[in-house]
Every structure is written in C-alpha cells, then in structure tokens.
Length: 459
Image (spheres, rainbow, N blue to C red):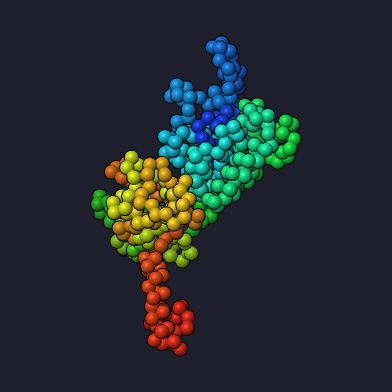
C-alpha cells in the first residue's frame, strides 16, 4: 500500500472540469469513476451503501460527492468541489462544477483552473440551454480539450439513434464556437457503461471509454517555457540604516530572469538591468522563475508605477500596449453591462477604467446583423472594451495570466473574460478613412497611386 501511495504522488497531474446542466448526471459520473478505479478512501463506498440501507434510501453514486450540507438539503451542486482521482497514466484533480444557472459564477471559477473538460448531457432531456452556455464558457476560458458524455442511455434502451441525434445537434453548436470535441461517448453513469470498461450493451459503439478519453488528453506547456513576464505589484523603499535601495516586486507569471538581464517595463518603455534578486532570510540567488514572488533592484535609477509589466528587453515577448481590446466575456452582475458607463478593469496588477464600446455577439442570439445594447446577467458574448489608459497585456492564447481579466461594477466582481486581441486605435479607425483617402488620391493622381498600401508610405 505504501508503494502505491508513492507511485500515486509521482504521477503527472491534470486539472479537469466536469460540467453540464443540473440533473444531467455529472456527480453520478464522477462518483462512478472514483468507485470503478478504486480512487475512494478504503471503506467509503461500503459505508455510504450501508448508510442508505439503514435509512431506507436507494444508493446513488452521486452520494459519494455530497459532502456539503447545503448540497444534501437542496440536491444540487452549488460549489466547485475538488476531487482527486487516478488512472494508470496520471493523477487528476476533477473539478465538479455546478450546472444550475444561478451558480454560473461558481462554475466559471472552477473551470478557470482546468486544462480540459467533460460536458455531460442527459440523453432523455437532450441539449439544454445551459448545455450551450457551458460550452461557450469553456470556449471563453480557452479550454480546447473537451469530451462530451451523452448520459442516461440506459433509460432509452441504449439507443444509437438517440445518441446520434444529440451528437449531431451539440456537435454543430460546438463547431460554431470553434470547439472540437475529442470524442462523443454514449454512457450510463448509473450502470457504469463506457465509463471504465467498454459496454457490451452498446456494441454499435467501438470508441474510447471515458477513462481512455481522459488519458488521451495532454497537459498544456508550462508557463516556464514562455517569455518572461512579471506584473509590477509595488516598489519598496527603506530608510533605515541608510538603505537607499528601490525594490521592485511582483509575481512572475511566465519565463525566468537572472541577475544582469536587460529588462523593459510596459507601457512606459523604460529600461534597466537587473542588479540583484533580493531575498530575506534565505540563501542568495541569481535566478527567479515562473510562480515565484520576486523582488529586484536595478542598476539604473528609473521611475515606474505598479501595474506595469516587466519583460526582457531582448526577448520576443507577446505583450502588447493597448487601450482597446476585443474579448470574450461572461457577465454575472446584478445590473446589465451597458454603454457609456465606467467599470473597473483588472488584469494582472493593472487597474484602469473601462467602457463597453460594442457587443459583437451574444450566446443564444444568432440573428445576423442584430445590434445588442448590453449584456444581461448570465449572458456571454464577444465585446470590444475601451480602456481609460493604455496597459500591457497579452492575448489569452499567448499568455493565459496576462490575457484574463475581471470587470468590477460598484465593488462587485461582475464579469470576467479573456483577451482575444488588442486593437490599435489607429487600426480600428483607419479602415473607412483609408478607403476614402485612397479613392480621392486615385481620382486626382491615377498614375501615382495604384496600390492602397502606398498611401502610408508616400505621404
């Protein structure tokens, strides 16, 4: 037993979120996975079964996860529970996210820690509106490794036709979000069909089980392999004992840095060399890396402010300075996200005022050409935000930490999203202007301007 524990601790770890509409069978599926892979504490399964027998209750695998008193009273998952689970390949932290629409905030919080996901759909009820909302949330969070479990097929006599119908309908929806599921798997979580072992009751399906599909996922590359970036949290000065050091502190979100490196702060573009990596009551160090809270002194005296991002000056870092972004956003505020209202925008250590400039798309409203005036509570969409001051950030797919933000409305964290791209104000406005300018120049100087790209070069 001791050897098994050591092996378990040495395995690779992966965070996976399990989500779906309320009562579609998420907790039952997770409970079955835990039981069928012997991942439960010794005696846990038997204990719950005995308790059910004594109290005249029918045993359900979902009961294995009913740890919270509120869950037991209400019969729904209201928090994002963390469940440890293991296969022969790796250790998993499974995040059992709430499916009820009122608890989307909890689901979003849970899913933000995951690199892959299982979406559970009830074969009897079919694709619910919340099933679509959860699909979009995974898209918003940039979770690209997804499998869909079509559950409760035992209630439909393991019908292939019912499975195919849901696969086609939900697959088409996910495709519109550019989410490509690795598999659609027909299952019965209650009966354990296609969870760990391939089901003989669905001979028409010869694909992977849930366990095999999970093991086929890959962890994302570590942020340690990305460019160096550290949002500047504060600058410390000490006056005791004639200590004139100016110490720059923050959490390193990617890459590594060493003494002597040439660094640049964005958006100020001020540059300096790392003099020392400061430590307190610890051995001297010359390097700092991803995940560390770090403190530096610089050789050159420069003035920068908290909220800036420190990068290596000679490194090709995907960090952009902008005051306008295109983003995917979920709104959870009590009041709608509206135009011409100031919101607090928080990304890394930067805090600026933001306004909604445009709502480009809203989930559930596929009407082409329709203009939207706001985002209401629990709505998700693509938006353009205008910031009061330029800040340094990354597209989410270049650096997840520098590409994820929160919007605050009257002290309430009311919205969150990911940066799709930064929009240069010049580029955002130049389209129509350049078209008109080119048409005018070509009219009066037909032999000189034959290519629109010549405008900026020759003028």
